Length: 140
Image (cartoon, rainbow, N blue to C red; front, side, top):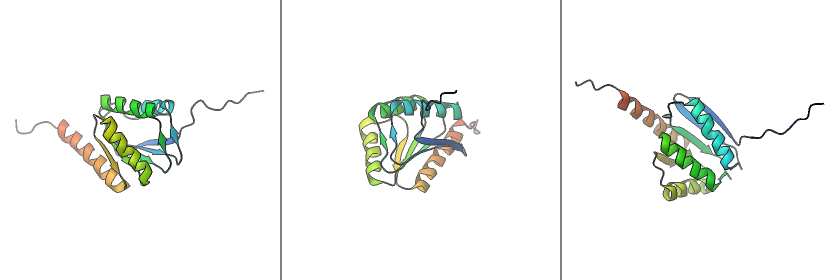
């Protein structure tokens, strides 16, 4: 008889890449621990080996990101340079994201938004800036 074991990792998030932007949606009530953040970082590296795609993180109500997970996110994104846009319609969650911004002072571009449209526009601007920086100088 086969013994079924619960998976080691039960993701509290969905992650996909669309039009050069990585999208991450955290489930309502999710508690992101360091092992979850490590899995997120691993998946982001697999979807974006260059490490330059902006990340839109949509946080549902009652989401909690534990301190070690936040520190890992700051360290990894700071090293890779991913721009991160947090979308949090819930005022409490948005306040936590703003607190992260002010306390951790991430070295990467980081913004907090209440509306998905504003965050998506900001992420697209980051993609366009990347293209402009990589374009050869035509004045030479």
